[in-house]
Each structure stands twice: as C-alpha cells, then as structure tokens.
Image (cartoon, rainbow, N blue to C red; front, side, top):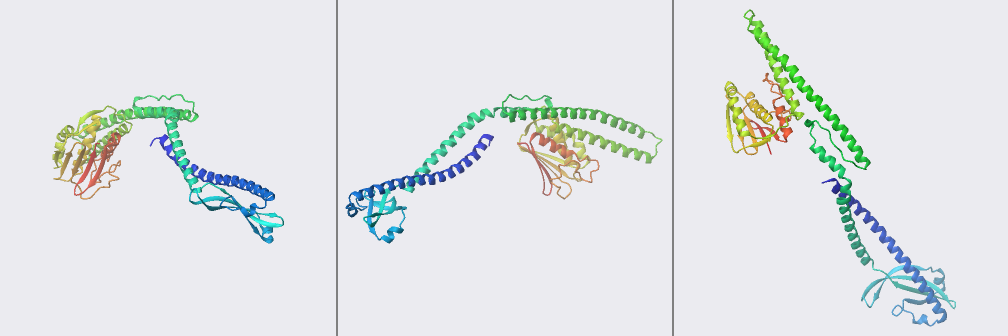
Amino acid sequence: MNLLNYTLKYLSVALLLVISIWAVLFYFNMIDEVQDSLDDGLENSKMLVIQRVEKDSGIIQRSGFSEHNYEIKEVTEKSGLKFKDKYQDTLMYTLNEEDMEPFRMLTTVFNKDNKYYEMKVVSSTVEEDDLVRSLLYSLIWLYAAILISFFVINHLLLRRIWTPFYQLLRRLKAFRLDQDQGIETGNTEVKEFKELNVAVKSLVAQSVGTYGSQKQFIENAAHELQTPLAISLNRLELLAENEDLSDQHLEAIGQVIGTLQRLTRLNKSLLLLSKIENKQYGDVALLSINTLMKTLISEYEDFAQLKSVQVDLKEEGLLEVAMNKDLAAILISNLLKNAITHNIVGGTVTLSISSQRLVISNTGRSAALDSEQVFKRFKKDSHAQSSTGLGLAIVKAITDLYGFDIQYSYTDRHHLELNFR
C-alpha cells in the first residue's frame, strides 16, 4: 500500500469517528432546538387561549382535543396554587395517519373568576425515528462524498506535492555504487523534502567515498598479500629440495608450506567475499547451469577419485540463470567441492538439476548440521583441517546478491537445495 492510500485509510477511519460523534451531538442539539421552538409556540397558544377565555368564558365548555389543540378542565384551588407549567412529549391519535403520532404538550393552570382551570395545549412535532433515519442517510452520503473528495485530492493534489519524493526514490533505486557517481535531486519548495535531499546527497557521497576506499584497499590487499605469500611458498619449496636437510627439517618446512597455502586460500576467499558484498561483479549474462555443472564435474573428477567419491548428475530440465559467469562458476564449484570434501570414503554425490532449482545431496557423517550456522563464516567440520570455513559463506553471499534461496536439510544424506526463481 502506497503512502497516499495508507494516509487515506487512517483518515477515513478518523473521519468516520468524527462524523459519528458530530452526528450524535447534532441530533441532540437539533431535538433541543425543535423542542424550544415548539415550547415557544405552545406558550404563545396558551396566551391566545387565555385571552379568548377572558372574552368568552363559554369556550371552556367547548374545548377538547377532538376539535381544538387545547383542552380545559376545572381543578381545585389547592391544586391550582401548587401547579407549575410543564412541558412534555406525548402520543395522540390522528385521523389522517390513523395512528398514534408524537406531540409536544404544555400543561398549565390559570385563574378565571376566582376559579382555577387546568389547560393542556398540544402541537405536532417530528417523529424521532424518521428524523434519525433521514439524518443517517444524509450522513452516509456526506461521508461518501468526503471520502471521494479526499481520494481525488490524494491522487491529484497530494501526488503532485509528493512528486519530489517519488523522483528521489526512483533515483535511489537506480543508483549503483560501482558506477562511482553521485545522485541528482530535484527542486522543491517543501522544507522537509529539501532536508531529505540534502541528507540523501550527503549519505550517497559518503557511501561512494567509502566504497572507493574499500575497493582500493581490496585491490591493494590482493596485490600486497598474494605476492609475498607466493614468494615465501616458492622459497620454501626450493629449500625443501636441499638434500642436506634432515627429515625433521623437511617435515617442519612441509608444515609451514601447508600453513602458507591455507593462508593463501583464506586470503583469496576473504577478498572474494569483500568483492561480492561490495557488488564488484557487475557483468550479467544468461548461463546454462547444466553446461557449467558438466564442466566442473570433469574438473573435479580426479579429486573425487582421490576421495573415492562417485558423482552422479541427474538432468530433469534445462536451468538457465542470468548472473555473472565468474560468480556462477564459484557458486557451483564451491557447492560441488564442499560435497566431495565433506564426504566419506566410498560415498556418493548426487546432483539434480530442474528448470528452477539445483539440489546437491551427498553422504557424510551421520548427523545433521546446524542449519542456522552452516552458512556462517568459519563454521566448518573440525575434521577438515585444510578447509577455510568460507566455502558455504561465499555461496550464501552470492545467492543473497542475486536474490536466490538456498536451504540445508538432512535425512539420511545431506541436502543443499538452491532455488533460482
């Protein structure tokens, strides 16, 4: 839900609440005004009737609700002296409606020739159920009209006001750090949007600078670390060829060579992770995972034979993926190498390829791995001393980069399922 409709949703709820409260207050206020007006009319009618009685006392005998809007009857002096005017709502039968209808009635007492008379004066009033129904329908139409107006205003006026925000959002979506560029912001008169533009430009400039520094560091590290490591390995290999060295010295040199080789692999893996996370692999092409898998199986054939592991490929469909070809090779290579390395003697690796996913199943130790830790850095099998513990971390970094999904599970075999859709 976009921001404008999100605002409209809460605004409509708030508006409904406000209109409901307003309707209740308006109803009681309107009823009060109607009753005040009727009471004033009844007071006037009372005075007119009393004036007529002063002129013609005979109308007392002729009064009655059947023909007039008043009724007069004699009461005792005691009752007359204590009585106070009283206004009330009542129901009376009407011929035109043939039903009981609401009336407003004034009951009063007046004195005529030392006699006291009670007089009731009535006036027709509005039916509250009809009034409530009419008010409800009016409020529904009013609420609908206001909502439609808000909707139109949202999509015309407010959308125009929010144009600088949407322009900035589109530019941020299209922004790429590896292109080493800043970001252009549009002109706006809104203070908050101006502050947002300034903050975004500052953040982007800082990010571009940081990215450039990291990229330069990675390039320097790749050169400065790999070169002395390679030189050290070559010198140790030359030293190991010296026939004057004892077996103890040769064993020590072999251990150092192994450590340096592992350090070299670790350095390359860490640099690769940094490049992936910094999105320095930008070129994308449509690749066949089937073809790539067959190529890598042939490359790892000798390694699999050395481990006495059989590799089987099952092609259930053609899998094509748009990604960087180097990262695709690293992804599949790490998965295949991991399945062979952490296998058992005489074990098997099964590779299943369909149109949307790749599943790698292998035998191994008869215990499930921690699915939450298996893709973490430096999480490795304690028996695999030559492993850097970064193989599956690199796989996870690549899948995250392209939005692929990879899951680990265990039944009687270890399974890594990679979904490309």
